[in-house]
Image 1 (cartoon, rainbow, N blue to C red):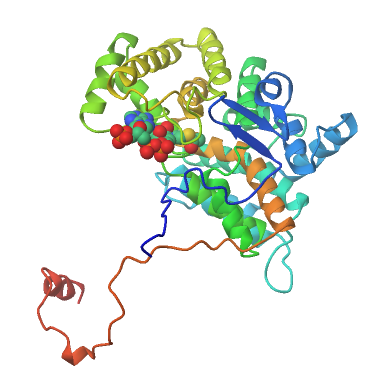
Image 2 (cartoon, protein in one colour; image 1 turned 45 degrees about the vertical axis):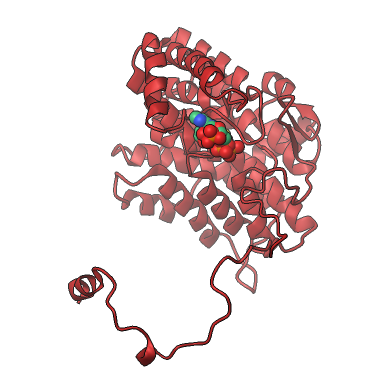
Length: 397
Ligand code: ACO
């Protein structure tokens, strides 16, 4: 073990290949199957990106229409799952509910003889179509409202907003959410996608893999960050308080959420589109959230430059996600669920890619425990009581 190199965070370690997306962190470039994210954000819909990821090319009109028909046909949730949500405590954490219901979808899909489900584009579309319906349904149920069924003629983005409020969204709101979903759709071997691929590598089915991905997404070093970015923005309250806030945060040893990235050593290329959306949405509602975010980013850049030179910590995708989604009326504790709505496209494409050329992912660990030792019978072990053990045991009895 003396010469074993341990890469705790797998930083820079290449563990597989993919044709789906490429992150070039030093240049700040992200491409999906060779298409630059800037082109896609400006021109493509989320549905086109889903087609690109799942089927390998941008769709023509007929292919896109076919996908839209399939998404629409799959949006409704099984009644039993709606009922389950209606009996769930209203203060349940939204990501806990979404992860559980996505897992539960498997129970309503016919399974194979061995208990697994077919992992194919049909199942992927099923998951991509239903995830926003789950998020919107829980959003209403937790507010004591009846869930609203999806409308067949609306896009994924417009339908989500409609299912939350019962009102057809404005064009600018639909566009903002659509761009968000496009930007979040894939990001190579990020933690949640890797979790999905590890699960797929055991030949688990697509529902099991999607559930793994959802579980890995939740933490604030990954998809759990934007809710905390919003908390910072709300705490700051006014743009001119941002600098003092960042100083206090860092003095407490905390991190500025939505900043820094394992791969990007420049500003995340997705941030500029989300910043634009946050600004535009702010102009037609309340500009405050965007303005505080902007001033927070400036303050953090200035302070990082002075206090952590060389660390290259810049805004990541989550930073302007917060004012964008908040301006759309989405509560901060549902932001990670929104991430899941977009990333389900990438997760499912990665799961199918993994299954198409599979090898069990099974790394090694450097053992740092005691050397080989003989088994000691229980009557020969030390009889000393660990602190508090008796109390606990008695309490339990
Ligand atoms: N605030 C303050 N300091 C930071 C931040 C930050 N946001 N990000 C990195 N640093 C500092 C660390 O304290 C560390 O400094 P040190 O060497 O003096 O101890 C140094 O930069 C390197 O940090 P690591 O955690 O080793 O870098 P890593 O590559 O693992 O960081 C991460 C990536 C986890 C995203 C980090 O930047 C972070 O915690 N950011 C805040 C949370 C966040 O925004 N998460 C969402 C990420 S995007 C996504 O997953 C979609």
